[in-house]
Image (tube, rainbow, N blue to C red; front, side, top):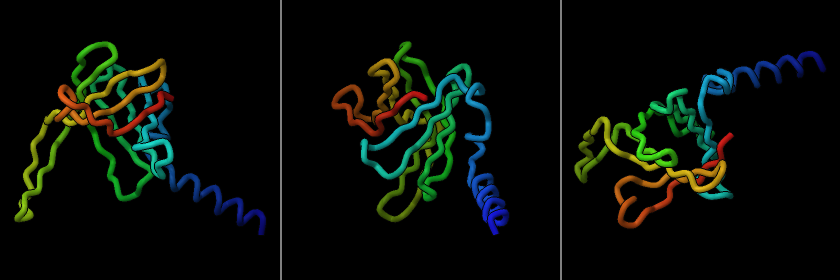
Length: 134
């Protein structure tokens, strides 16, 4: 019975791992673990390519699909995150705008980053995620 339980546990752990987590951390230049607030139930992870030009986002929340973004460097501590913006109007018509400026990633400590909405970043910045660098 113990062997069966151990085998089921092993398959459960292997079966639940995501692609981003199975690739070694050395494949990325930076990994951020982000939450909406410190007590949030779910954690989103942002995996940055070696040259910091692309990002893969995963989430603990099974309702959120993985997404891919590109970046535009503003300074050594600040990046614009670009992706497809989806807008649904009052009649349920959906329009997608590829390569839109979605967020601004800003370093605010030695290993702490904050992601803001791009739309109001320069006038009245609204924080979306607080992130710790892994």
